[in-house]
Image (tube, rainbow over the protein chains, first blue to last red):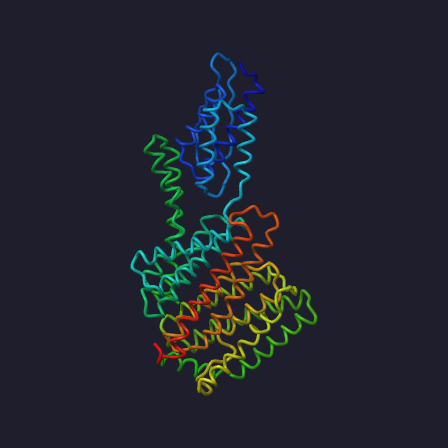
Length: 255
Length: 243
């Protein structure tokens, strides 16, 4: 039977693990499964309720009258599917090999200390991806080239504004405005300008929150699912606002 | 294309005196940055760059370029750049200090606004229907020259924003018959390479993928591919008979 200190120590780790996953773009049921698996490897039950900003965890051991509960904030972390997959594997390894908590914690520290993608590398790849979207929507090569450089400018603005701590809704409006303004230069040339302008903001579409929101609702986590969808829809609204301001000024000749 | 050159002719004919004053101010402030660097000179240069961008937005595009289709896009683009410099003037995010980057490259970029008119004259164009030093492309190349020479920690957004303009220049070569813009597009590549390479190197606690060596290799390959692409697009222009 575990002492109160041991249960609290275990809860601290599972809370850190679960919130790291939630902050990195994992849908709720996967987080619940992984956290329960780690709990099972230590012989305890984990009960987890999550909201948009916080998570509530409870740990209990069969036959033990002590129950520990904690409310933890979810950190904002960059989305990394590779890291999410590694952390899920860790939960399987913990339960399969019955690893002690100290070993699991050490492996967890090693996993989260692994290098992340360079922001400049991400910038270049996002630019290429958005230019490819332009081609997919029948944009010509000139439009695709313009979308590439427009995305670089818009995404760089997004990275710098987020780093400066600006509200992310404002960041999305400004980034959409800058990217679509840069892409609007294609209007001067004989190319598929409409496609260029429309696809220049696609890099901002919050795909992960949208998918996670739907999965959460389908799997019964209605509250967090709705929160994620509302957040994603607000971001889409911000993209539309940024793009609309540009279109009103340029195509609507307000200037 | 005719409208494009007509607007340039009208702009040059009406503003050539102002252009001389602007070039003189640019030369003076740049020399002061080299000889007597300090906070006041730095602020004067930022204010100058903001006003220069306002000039391009209002005088070049709004007043003389209004006949061109979608000139309002350009007004917004340059106004945004002016706002960026004004913000920098008050926030003090960019510091003009001498860097260890190659002086030859910055010198070449400074000279580019003067090479533009020479290039036009070599093509047989005459005043006022020719490129002059105070035009959007010259301003971009001068700003990049300043950044190469003086800004240790670059503003990535400003560089990519200017880079976007430079690469648009390549399309202008064909659509508006202005091969002078090749100079801008080509001279931007080494500047962007330097900025990106130093941006990666300056990250001292670097725990990123790909590592600095691979990243540098990747940058070199990208620059070579872009350079080869420029060459391939330039050749048919230089030797139309061969293509």
